[in-house]
Amino acid sequence: MSREKPMYGTSILKAVSVMQCISEQEEPMGASRIAHHTGLPRSTVFKLLDTLTAVGFVEKSAHDATYRLGIGLVKLAGNAMEQLDLVQVARPYLKELNRQTEETIHLGIPEHDQVVYVDKLESRQAVRMYSRVGKTAPLYCTGIGKAMLSRFPPKRLDAYLKEVHPAAYTSRTLTDPEAIRRDLEASRSRGYAIDHGEHEEDVRCIAVPLYRGDKVYGAVSISAPEYRMNAERVAQLLPKLLRCQQNILHRLP
Amino acid sequence: MSREKPMYGTSILKAVSVMQCISEQEEPMGASRIAHHTGLPRSTVFKLLDTLTAVGFVEKSAHDATYRLGIGLVKLAGNAMEQLDLVQVARPYLKELNRQTEETIHLGIPEHDQVVYVDKLESRQAVRMYSRVGKTAPLYCTGIGKAMLSRFPPKRLDAYLKEVHPAAYTSRTLTDPEAIRRDLEASRSRGYAIDHGEHEEDVRCIAVPLYRGDKVYGAVSISAPEYRMNAERVAQLLPKLLRCQQNILHRLP
DNA sequence: AACATTGTTTCTTATATAGAAACAACCATG
DNA sequence: CATGGTTGTTTCTATATAAGAAACAATGTT
Image (cartoon, rainbow over the protein chains, first blue to last red):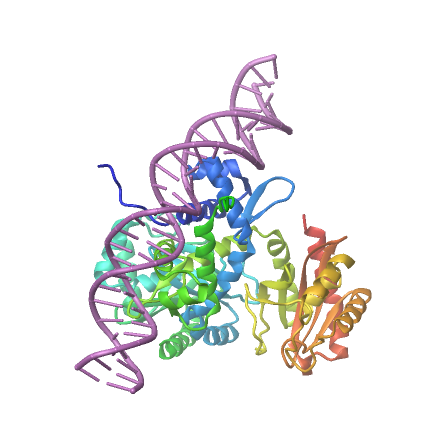
């Protein structure tokens, strides 16, 4: 009677949760601690780690028996990026934009209720800024995120705003859903979103969505420290950003 | 009697080979073709793909039922990179080198008989060059690879040279093991390796190994088109590259 | 010295998995 | 239009496998 329908893929799910556990922790952990964190029995974790090590998804430190993620993942992810049309298409235009502006350029895609950064071109003028390819960030307080949200169809936006619990990353983060909604409406009619240090103190950015109808593919942003991103500079950067947006959109399959 | 010892992790191994299959193919494939390529039964592949889709490691195209790698992998790999000490330590020095030289900088690590590129900083002056983070390349014909090989302990080098079957990527690729060996000896005594368009036509690079005793952590390279990388320029770039090497090595745990 | 951690292995049963097979669409091509 | 070859997908079952408990050794802690 309590015959649950067979659950396929359990070992894979467990393996993934082991990897996620490893990836979330700062310090490399041993098998037992991983077992604690995941709630899996130690012996199971051992076997999973064994297999994952064999395929290069995790690596075992020789002396202390701790585990970290392996380069096998990096290799696969490299190919994954190559299979993302958006990244391929956008690349040259992002480079051009980077050359023109000399600022840091990001390309992000929507993934559930987050941005995933899938490309990044740094400014020569090293802005201290924490981002990397593969990193995720909230939608409601990043330039890229807000650009994408501004083109979500109403229902999707409502659902999003109902679910998120906006946290104040900086003193300027908008956390009130209605304030966010107003900001998004402004972004939408303006055609681009602005992040006034709402995610990282002192980092401003302007971002444009990549969309067609209701389909939001991603967004492109230009980031700069506050002093280098005043109204004047924005006016100067904007046309380049918009041109980049159009270039990418036209080439998108 | 033919009782083989139980093979743990089979489903994970199969899942991985499915992902590898997807990653190797240019065009997105359907489940049946994946089944052919991997040699797994179709129904098994279906279930694996289902699970992998659920965890975001692969994505299923809505209309045609084809699969590609998912961003779940990109997210994990991003964290993997963050856990690689070498990448973290090297980053700032690579940026500095990139700024000083205005050329493309690569960081690679040895992985079995290949290089895996784990960081890349592009030159503004767009050199057409095929590389990306996560990509692998042979050791014997790339700057990074040769730099690393030049510091392999003799036995490891012998083993490597016995196993590889060098292919001629360009007209300049060294394919004779003895020629390779001589080149490596020169690199070793010189302290850096040179790639004269041996992997990609017209792309030259100079590379230094990151090693301590017998332990080879990786290598750093500067790449440029042939016309921009003459003896003179090399003489100019070299000190910067060597300083970068020392900086990284000193900070490595 | 007692106890709680670790890392690791062994063992067993219930269960998830693998693979075959069946079905339904869809193309080809004769 | 029939035949055969693809596809995508589901159902089924025996058996191999994975999960979890437990035991053991080696630490470290109190």
